[in-house]
Length: 201
Image (cartoon, rainbow, N blue to C red; front, side, top):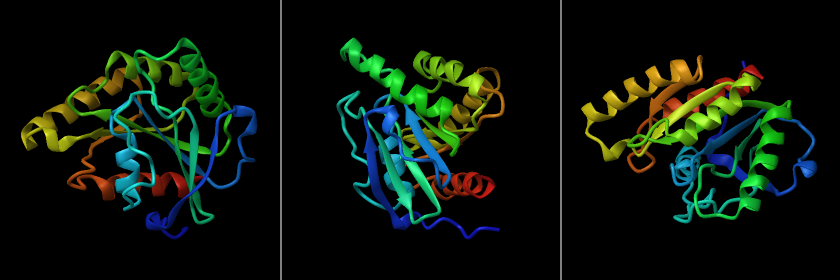
């Protein structure tokens, strides 16, 4: 069995704007994606115990790059541009489709996808559209219901149960958990999932 990933050693490696310039596949890659402002960047920072590994922006659609973060030579965490943003030029949306589409569909080293959803608004139409688009690829998906601290414990577990039920139809086989970057809720569970995917690849 491979040693556990050293998340605290995660460092920025490179950014890609053109899918034709992706680096040659090497170590397993775990991609992070989600609707704009769902808490994806905050989740990455929490998992790696770093405050600004991934840039946190309040402006939807700001990140239009694929950002690679290396955990030594063992694995990459890959920050994908957010989807479902409104009020951005059509060309930006089309670029997202080409950049993320090519990466997710064709990348042989992609070991799994961590999908961030705001626990207060899980499985939005944009989330369902993304899952429907992703379904033919049969990629492994793990959902983080982010900002779990915004709900009571009872409300959070109710939302988790409803999300899991919705995922059974939207993307069979997907798993889900509660997550709060603020309170570090679910960080170890999420690390365990990422580590398991890296080991299995």
